[in-house]
Length: 277
Image (cartoon, rainbow, N blue to C red; front, side, top):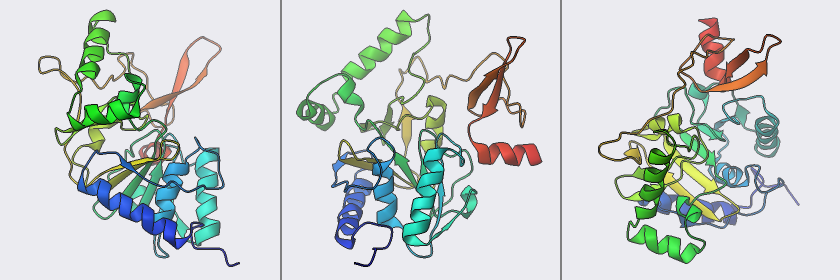
């Protein structure tokens, strides 16, 4: 049997594309989707791979990152998989890509119209942290009943010396209507979801859910009127040892013999560009 383009059969691709259209029609709403099996374990990017496989064309160019890096095992293997099964070109430069598949980061490089960003999502519904029942969570979304989320936000604000605890996967409100998980990205990345010119698609294979943001969608991190959202930027003066940036999201690189920490930008593309400038 001849191997199909980008691994998935055409019927599965059409089903996923129909789901994507539904998700784009109602931004932030979780649409059930088939999430066919891929030759990779759930939890390692099946949802994102299914979406990417359904959208790829022969002329597309793909970029894959894991926590901002093009060089991790997950990113390298997914990129190699689509190179083998689709024969498409790949790149490490966001501006050259038509499809960007990411995990745990929103690209720091500027996105443009006609690009598609695909997110790997482990936990698509932020309400499941408060209720065990998927039916009850769906009812709460239908009625925009998000009081429990704001109660938790208030408790964390008043119980931790004024610092809200979640540093990742901080919920956002889409078009003032649906509560959405931005996938486990650092909460400082939430601002880049807002008014983005690219299409953004979030695939969660284990939960069989898909949701999306059309270009220029209004996305706001949840907050109170009198207490604005705090992106949680570090105030200890840490900087990247490669490019010297102190505003990008930094990963802990190592602890030196003198007890001092060293940090490096998680977005390797932007870090390299700043270092070369």
